[in-house]
Amino acid sequence: MNPTSILLMTGGQAGGLGQFIPLILIIVVFYFFMIRPQLKKSKDQKKFRANIAKGDKIVTIGGIHGKIIDVQDTTFIIEVEGGHKLKIEKSAVSMDSSTMIGAEQK
Image 1 (cartoon, rainbow, N blue to C red):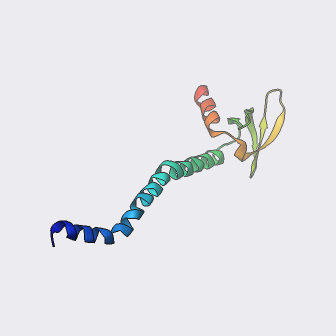
Image 2: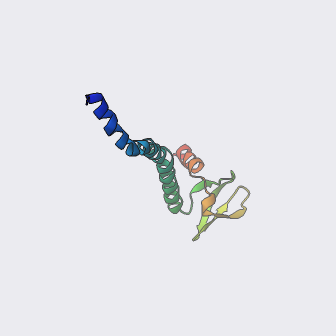
Image 3: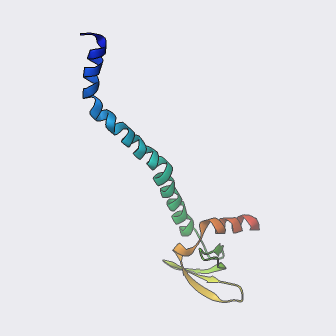
């Protein structure tokens, strides 16, 4: 037997694992570029919403600007222009817009 025929015989046996390597690599890349950043962003938003206190200025996802006047378990009461009060869900606060407002005031 020559070396080429020996390599060909052993290559056929390792083919099962070799077929799964590209699939595993795709899953790993998908996790690190898609799933992990989304989980981190979600965790940061949850932490941001938990740290909002009375007197903070916020922007809702719908674009309403207001100032927090009361913090409850799952809702905020905000005061908008004209002295009107609105009750909104904590999940309706936009982290991106609120942090930009905080940066402008400092």
